[in-house]
Image (cartoon, rainbow, N blue to C red; front, side):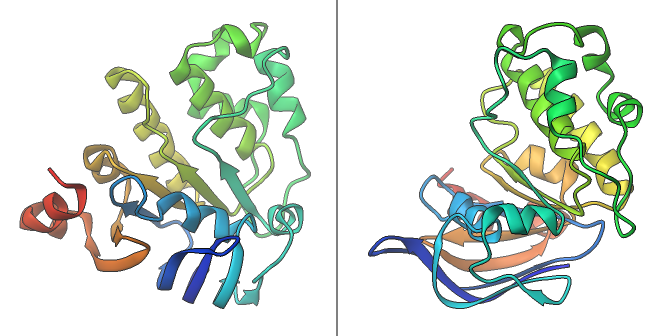
Length: 233
């Protein structure tokens, strides 16, 4: 579904990604694992058209979307969930969901309010609450739910477990597993390998903008040393 082919990208004159290759298939979750500054967020931003490519290609369902504007990439079915959540603070939970609404796609699962709230049942009791009054974990759930209302074929999740309580992290992992089971691909950046292990089928290990390893989450966890080296633990 999503493919990076020897991608070089960065910001201005600063190159961050170097000859990066990766793939995400339909209904698959792939985790980008590495320390701060490894290039995880830049990889996601490159997929959605927020960085400058200097080489390589980004393909989505076989179409070359290299350099495509962010709104055009979103129309093709890429959903972006940034680390800082960016909820509409003065709008209610219900209004935030409504803002994200897009018509169903023939090639993607259909997400209605009812289906989204089945995935995130905690939000059902908060529909009339302004988003500014939600906890960090609730805002994260709302951001993912709002993105699903856009009928994405693939979700880009930037550090989804960052700064939220452990119980909410567990709930979020279960919810995202349901999204994956519905056929939505997921590419997420994570430093929390336990969260990644609960969701991802595979992981790509990043160091200084380069892929230095790849494999199933189970194999990487069993090996141990590679994860520890990449995360500096």
